[in-house]
Image 1 (cartoon, rainbow, N blue to C red):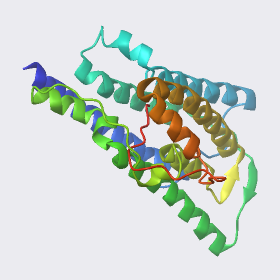
Image 2: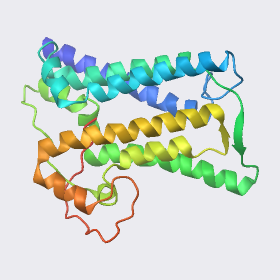
Image 3: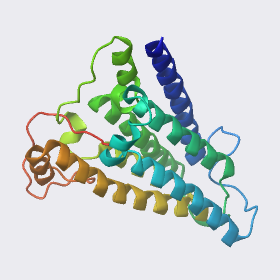
Length: 255
């Protein structure tokens, strides 16, 4: 009975996540969704900044903290190991939904691109960023990353096996194509409002800090293999500066 409940829980968590990430595309791009990133200011600047900083801070602490190996060891003493990842995904999704709901636009405009061709190119980059993000998850193991593999193995009464260190396609260009996709999507906008700029700067800072801690975990997990990978492949920008191309294998996003 328990394995059926785990599977249902994992599927529900994934569906909530998938709906949340689709809403995030509309939220950041100001496309279709009822409430998006930008809009006229509703509160004094200091209040709006405080609320937004709190929302981003809570998400950052949860999203990065719960992904750390030390927290997982403690956390799995409380919740069953097969649903640890699904729980992480579910809590992250709930906090993202809260961010969408409570987010406070700041008003103001930094730049606007009027040229139709330039606008099309920028929207193209926005789409490429999200496409890169999704593609990166499937290159490593989309279903493991979001908890479905774990609950499916438990349902089949099979033990969980860690993913092997490997470097497919995009991971031979940069170590973190998933995060690069996020950064492109965050910054590619024909109209950069003050709200969007604050959001993009804050998320960029979080990603850089998150990568630092994530790579420490990956070095502990994969040892010399990941150290050599770091030497050969740049972190976010596909500029090698004489670095050698890595041999085949799989890059992993710990978070």
